[in-house]
Image (tube, rainbow, N blue to C red):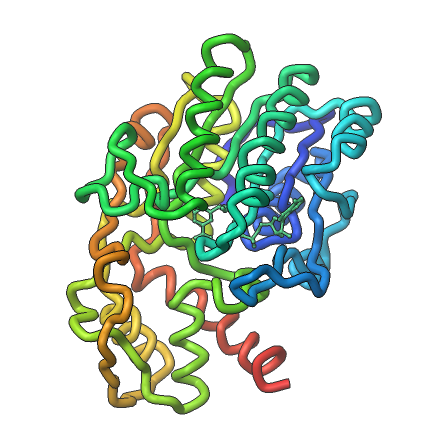
Length: 336
Ligand SMILES: NC(=O)c1ccc[n+]([C@@H]2O[C@H](COP(=O)([O-])OP(=O)(O)OC[C@H]3O[C@@H](n4cnc5c(N)ncnc54)[C@H](O)[C@@H]3O)[C@@H](O)[C@H]2O)c1
């Protein structure tokens, strides 16, 4: 679906993290709906490097970009020479900044702050030099255990990832005061949908439960999963918010969710309906009690008002739209 009618002729768009889940979906949105725009994807792509939690340092994967015909650059946003080359060799009109250490369980605080916060500042400077509007990924992790519905201004991050995103928001507010470019921070809640598979164990629980079910395994849930609630949002609504943030009425930081909290039990029930299974759920004690979010729900009043954003996908709709791709992934990736 096309979200803006504006022509993007002669416009150049940079998507950092463009080989990742959300960035690659943005790249295809532009290719399909605005073929007149020039799109440049920058991503560090994956190597074999692991962090201390055993997960990959970066999840970018070429398969997310198969079919994309724009320019692709492999590079690290922490590399000042690369940023200088981008400044000199291009003239960007919009920067969608999705590159980050996106894994919320990463413990390397130095790497997290350098990548998520310090490199973002360099990209803001680049945006100002080019007169480009900046649309960047913040996160619901800034809220930690703040009471629901979460509102901008009530942050209590519980990990260095959430802290890094809050630092990005604080930095953005400074730049909003002293620059003329549009700057929009989008606090995504729990995103799911096509092209998340290569996030491995950090992909959404929707995909992970679906593949457990397709393997014929009983879904394993934490006890009281009907009371563990999250605002799960389908990728198409995330794309909608990004596109509507391109030329905002005003700069700001906005929640991007559905404004409805759904339970982990709901996920499994909807998946079993869509996949036509009736496996017995197994319940295990929740080892994270005390450090776990039990209820996230986005207050999206200002997102609606300022950006004109309107979520289109309830969880039933999102899973229905996704199930074909879930099965394809199971066949082509999981079973191989
Ligand atoms: N998916 C979610 O539920 C969610 C929720 C809240 C916020 N976010 C944020 O949205 C953005 C996109 O997330 P995603 O789910 O697509 O994750 P992702 O990991 O699939 O995408 C991030 C991309 O950034 C790249 N990257 C990492 N370090 C880099 C570096 N130093 N230089 C260049 N590229 C680098 C990775 O290779 C990856 O392709 C991230 O900023 C993430 O923190 C995601």
